Length: 343
Ligand SMILES: Cc1c2[nH]c(c1CCC(=O)O)Cc1[nH]c(c(CCC(=O)O)c1C)Cc1[nH]c(c(CCC(=O)O)c1C)Cc1[nH]c(c(C)c1CCC(=O)O)C2
Image (cartoon, rainbow, N blue to C red; front, side):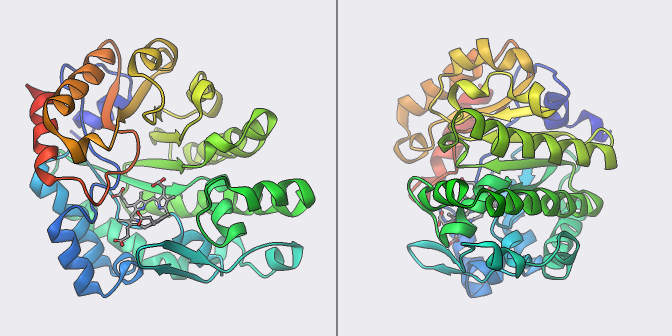
């Protein structure tokens, strides 16, 4: 029965007349019911660590839109916190972390097996969801990819060009590489526990992959993803994995084969027509509608939705945005997109 879920069929490589659909950040500030639950929790991190409320916000977009997948409500920065970094969110600005700038800072972090006490509420959220989701809905667990998580740990915040992480990569390569290794190993443990708790698919978010070029892309995006996917599949045979090397451009070509991912998620900087010819030939793809269309709506949203659906109709495809839906999106536009996709 489970194998008949639309998302799992796509991940096995099946083309479907209407592609399954979910949205990155589908539980988020554009929904009034999310804002109400976050207010009840107090703040974003309290919401992440409250299993009942985190499960509630995960379910909200499923009730409203009947998406084919639910993504666990958590954040990629919970793992650095579990490794011992300080983490807080500044309203209207984003995340802040204590910084890792040298070997001494790295040495203070915990080991890959010492993360589970902090992350236990996340596993509990997964268990609740595995129980509460409609039987046709696939539950996706996730983690940040090592490079993207490292960029936040090194800079202590989001950065436009990931400058501090690139500098550490050149000035103290041993520390930088050791941080990537620790994150690679800890991510395997973290995702493994999510799968044991009931996640059916896992997704690796490498939001800043596009700033790695040449050999750096191989060493710090591709190779860690390959190691994580191989270790997870050894422990959980048949586990489908979605990889999102955002803004990888030409490097999307062959990424699934090189890493062992079952699906590559595309941002909206590549055209669906190009990706159908150059990426989808290697297996399932996910994406790639511009999230701005969820703000502007109208005929353009309808046309672009159908264009992307039709471009990928020859192979396996999971419909999604090219990046997360934004707080200024109109919830009605999600209905408009779903009607265009299914009609
Ligand atoms: C880089 C990154 C982060 N977190 C994540 C990424 C990778 C994907 C991407 O590139 O967007 C991933 C993430 N963050 C969140 C999820 C939950 C699942 C989902 O609905 O997609 C997922 C999968 C919730 C969240 N994570 C965050 C929110 C908004 C917080 C709030 O409610 O105030 C949500 C719903 C906060 C967050 N978390 C992060 C930042 C930079 C911010 C601040 C920016 C912002 O406010 O949008 C780190």
